[in-house]
Length: 237
Image (cartoon, rainbow, N blue to C red; front, side, top):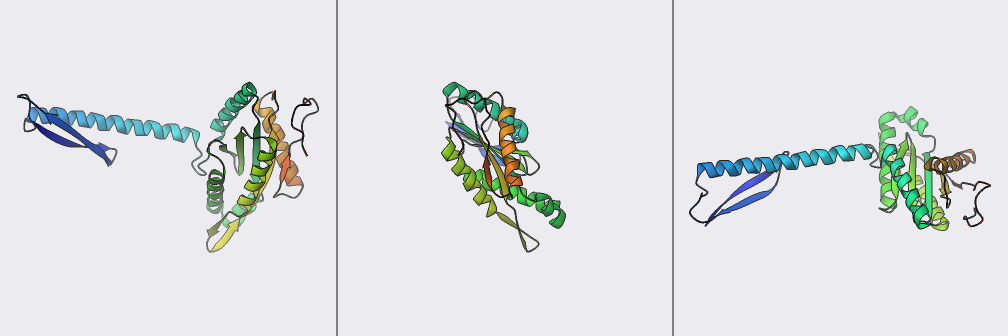
């Protein structure tokens, strides 16, 4: 009994080794034809692995924002639609946070857009660090982010929103020996038992966000419930 080993190369990295044992009176590891066949098989395995890597990269590029590491807007809206449907079926609480970085244009104007990108990247990283894996973190556009909190009642959602505000206020980057930081204005909306659509929930959270900005920024505002909401819906403080 004999054997041969072949490195499995995927892309530019060796990802493993293929070991082949030969028994009986058939082909042996010294047989050139046998080695040629095995070499071709190993090359095909490596090609398949490389194609799988590329497909995975294309898929990830299609759902993630490259700068912040959060989901992009298209995928975030898809997840919002799915989660609202699930929440309605299971009568589960669901909260939506919209946040916007305060005076972000001044950062770009003062330090340049590369510094602005560094701040956005730091904010995205902090958002991903402090929230649960089950929470949807999405860069909604520009310096605005959307966070979906599934299975989260109102007191927990308010706590998360305030904690997130505090965490972002403590986030900074060093740019040309200068510490650059920002704050966030946050709007929070609880999904209603029969929320008409994701855009309706987004509209309520966005309205609360702009109330936070009008009230002086760097704070959390909760969306008011529409007048037609049921008596069983959670009431704002």
